[in-house]
Image (cartoon, rainbow, N blue to C red; front, side, top):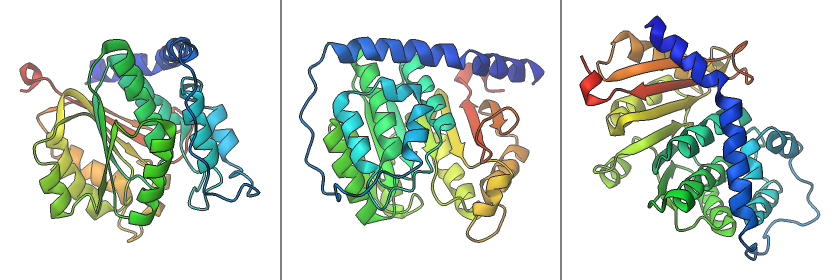
Length: 280
């Protein structure tokens, strides 16, 4: 277990270099493409951007790898009254590195809102497709239909409409389970209800859908974020603690990321699915 922990720590130490390499490669690719036109905004042009927006993107090297069209879509989104501005550069940078650095092609996102992280994840997948020629896809699930409709508009404006599939409903709804029944994913990113009970169910449903060597990531997994549980049951952290206590045999390694080793006090969690030969 110590060996696995040291390996994860070494991977995290190399993360800034990896992100810089990814961003440089993406910039070179973007420079060769003429910017596409941007869909006119439906937001009030006199509305100021969310004050957290510029701070967030200034900490995201992945932002530099986006096309001018995608950047314009995000700038428009920053004026959307539904955009909270509370996106986490730390977790988005990690997801970008895992996708781009490992040429992952299938991603599931639980929790869309108006699509800020969706645009970044789709951008990472697009870079993989540009380099490898592989088919890529992002499935994203959210129960707030009006916000997801706005997310679809921003994703299309960013140029990623052919990559992203939107699914309206709770991640635990039978219709969603049925729709995704035959799907498996390289990366699953959970940032949905923040509720302990719901998160336990999500783990039970979606961990089997992680491909061997793939990743499941949780936002708001730190002890501070337990307060975000609307039912005050202990949040994502409690659900993860209980799952780990069962010692799943197909879990290769995991890491809880929170201060002082992680910038965002809300924390994150990273689990790696074992390859078949590594399962004891």
